[in-house]
Image 1 (cartoon, rainbow, N blue to C red):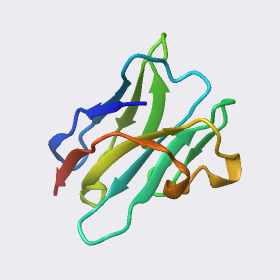
Image 2 (cartoon, one colour):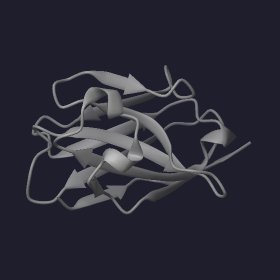
Image 3 (tube, rainbow, N blue to C red):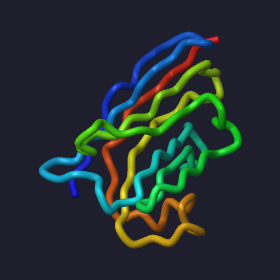
Image 4 (cartoon, rainbow, N blue to C red):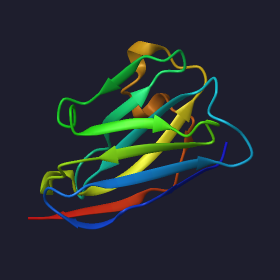
Length: 124
């Protein structure tokens, strides 16, 4: 599965941004889809995910501000980020996997397929 992430940029605190992740040649049906992020000098961090059966999980740091969704055809998934904060600055990655169990939804090592990352910078 090839993933293409896009939509990053430079915004101010309080602004909104929507990231996209497209799967080439297939849909996301049957996959758990997730977003992770990595700030300079830090480990890759779980942002949120939709489990293949529909369960949703978000990191506490983004809960209520970030939302993961799909287009109608489930070819593209989105990360809507509202009320952005400087601490949200990071490279954001989309990831998918077909087989992971729900308890591993936040474990980056369990995802087999990754997009290339898109930079999000939030200025104060």
